[in-house]
Image (cartoon, rainbow, N blue to C red; front, top):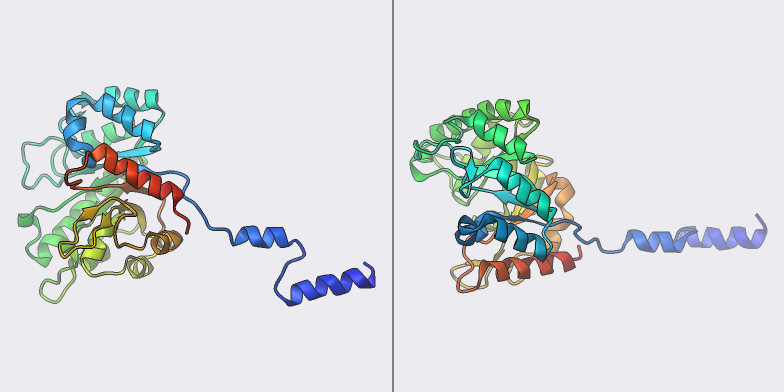
Length: 295
């Protein structure tokens, strides 16, 4: 190397600029999301009438994968797992996950955590899913800390079953898990009493914010354990109602920048209530925002 080149490269390194400046600049370019999922509960009225048509429309928007709900006795929206799998394959989208209930308050539903669970898991595997998620605890199931400890035991037990099928068990939060009972936070009880390998988290980020928590701080506290997210926004009103992603007050760039801390592998748009807007329009708005998001 001649003296002139040596001096030039030394000066560049001394100012923090690499010899190949274009490589350095590219490393600071904002990242963009590649794949986006949607929880089909957002479209619950329409999909119960015609699941094939709705899955086609979801794929047409650009969504890459979906999360199911409403499994009962081997069927989703009145269709068998085999029929649903055919729809998914035809439209080129994947079902990564499904929501379930414990069955404690729904004893007639077949395919809950306490009623023919292995059948539900087998159908989940048939769809090619990677996660089975406990979606919600009804009020009678969450009155005491002991209730949460029993739920933790149930999650561990069900996680052993999903493990046999190569599927991960998980828990989906709302805001009530952060309301202390007898000086203990139920979310901490659930996470501390479940096997971290058997049970992961699906963090609903809206509900974490609604509970007064910072999602990124929650990620840090439970780093690597939060593999799924639910993404929906919060409007700027006293009611803090649900809103299309990007139209509200939640700082999505900050949250997505912390996805490695979380351990996030996939996320799903969900909007429990789309107000007067067609849910398909709502998920289209959220999709377009997320595909344009830089973080």
